[in-house]
Image (tube, rainbow, N blue to C red; front, side):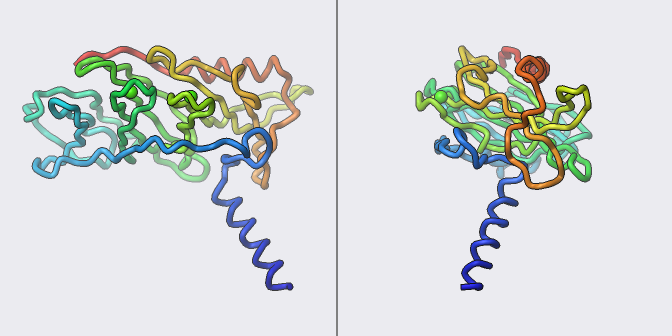
Length: 251
Ligand SMILES: [Ca+2]
Ligand SMILES: [Ca+2]
């Protein structure tokens, strides 16, 4: 009996650490979220090319997707590349490293889109911070580039909440906010977004429970805080939304 009890406790503790920070949630309505399998596939390095480019395959030709993006990736050298120099993303970003790139149809338009995850360098809580670049594809040459930063980034942030075949995006930030007495604390802030006509728009009003702010206490906690007023939550959500960069690109 004692053994069984210990087993249950250890499973619970393990499950909690798997879910830290507090996503996936244990309280309603989040516990009932079904996580859609978007059939993502890893964007692989081009093995024929010694310079190991990340290649995004389209029906008619290959695009060079990411080149020299983030410290720790290969230096691709010359720009005279066999993929007709069609580059979606390139940069010398010494604050991050390329984690992975996936392709999947996020907005359900039948064309695969691409998501690039990069990690910041740092220690302590900063190691959880990352950068996300989404390339929504409209045609062979037209993309919408969406960029945002967040914590604990990954493909599990793409969920189809309303089951319409289009992904919603849950974004986690660590935010500073003042409680009702004016005392400041840190909170894990969760906002939800939809993809509308190629744009990432805030959809907190449409989905119950968002925005969600969990007091960062360095203790086990996944409950929405009662510290913040509705107005203050909206203010924080607006601030986070304003940090998303979106632009149409043509290659
Ligand atoms: Ca798509
Ligand atoms: Ca949806």
